[in-house]
Image (cartoon, rainbow, N blue to C red; front, side):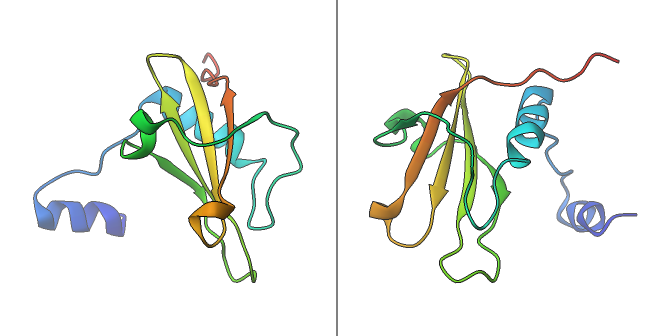
Length: 109
């Protein structure tokens, strides 16, 4: 049994499984980011929309051991049906927000 399931059982709750659109979108965009950034030519916006700032996010990667490494967090605006990827590396003024990007449907089985 996975350690996370054991911990969840000990705490009395099961881990939250992301909705399929979150899982498939994160899997898709996660392939394009790393601690060194991204080579993709995605559009950018000046800042993450405020209504998303304190909402659910999925970490796509961490900065790792790379000096000046970048972390990427994905936000989905379900009302607008768009995705934003927040790239951070140090102080807040060094944030880059990619988006709006399209969400990715899960493959049909």
